[in-house]
Length: 318
Length: 285
Image 1 (cartoon, each protein chain N blue to C red):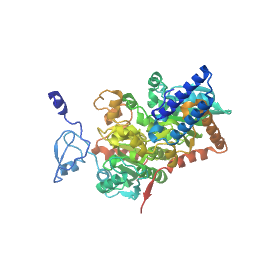
Image 2 (cartoon, chains in turn orange, blue):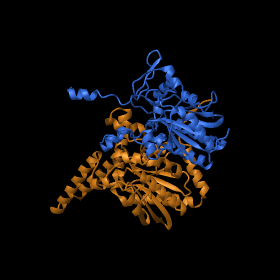
Image 3 (cartoon, helix red, strand yellow):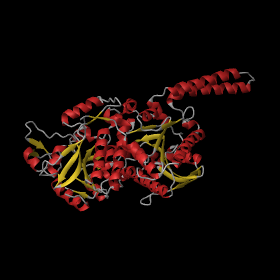
Image 4 (tube, chains in turn orange, purple):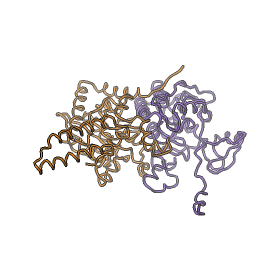
């Protein structure tokens, strides 16, 4: 597995442990206590590193190539998951996946940004950067969910909507804007989970939900720290400074009242254990949806409006 | 420096982004597109449109309101809402200080002026964005004022007209500025339910989070000529696709051709066009 720069000390130690293990096997030496000690140290080291992560390190984890993607999570979380395609207007965007499935007997619609895990997949998925047809497909599926009274789960994981020539021609701005307006009106509960990177309007375009959760090492931002650095700080190399200023980690986003909760990741990040990650997400979804079963449609729509209506910080003089 | 480099640098500037309207003496101005030197009083009489090349100068909210609505009919609302630096954001300058400077420069608290006005005797709710205030960027204040404007339109059955001129979300307010896109668009859903007309007038420039929310959601989308209207900025796109963009890309006429706008209207015809549209869609004197 690819390791991140700040994980190097752990990687080194793990290699040493492996060496000890092979020695202990071949020469009948009793190194068990040594190995146990080293393992304990590695655990401690990982804990230390992961409890003091800087925003820039969190960004790296949120973009880790082995991070669980929307499709894999959908398959792990829902029964009978079946992917459905196309916006019925122009095409099918592989950067946003949609599907239907079941969760404890309840029918669910699933929408998520889709990144790849290697170069080939990433090119096919356009690095998770949707074109307008992605947002239009998502909206089509939201209407479908509304029609058949299925709750909607969306997974956010995108650097942003694709800044391309054809995307502009086909109305990227209009597609996102329409989703924002329509999502507020959908008459079923919507739960959004930021599973990796929450990049700007391209993220929000499927994120107007009753409840928004952040994975522990996910981020959500109005602009990429790199983009912010080059515009405001006039130097793309100051991305880490921009990241500190923008307040983009799960804790920050929750603190600002934008996220309703944080979903814990397995020790060392979601990329270390997809199954455990999926289980934890599933538990959150099941719990949340149970609460909505008792509520009527008007309440659900009103709750979503009220949630976004109160967002903003200002003072008002006379 | 080689001669080739030197020649390359000599290319005429595409369009100055700053609004250097005032040549000393406040008497003359220079058109940023055709470089014609213009007598300011004449320019104002021409609604700040270059008589030679039809370039539409960017406007202050005051000028725009004067050009379009009935004389002295404008009444400002929520003028006292003011931004705060809740993230303690500091880039090359503190956000706090940027706000203060912009307020001193524009005499406004933030990047939009909202209120009620008469359009040939029809009462309307209007919002006019101000590019001169931190690039017309949308933070909490702009989001809140637009939302209130729309909500009151729904309540009083006043048609809503918003003139956009904005670079997008205000980065110094982080995620909160992103959420203003959802908040304003949500309010527009309520306006739609109330069946009250909303006309979005897109002026130069309307990009990013502003175009990807309320600016694109008009019952009618009307633009001034040659305004830059886009989701992603031209520079970002050029860097992404590594190609030069075609001439006129992301300008009003381009968007009209691609089905994103209903009309492109000269400033001189804007008052009449808005009146006609509003009166047909149901505004009442």
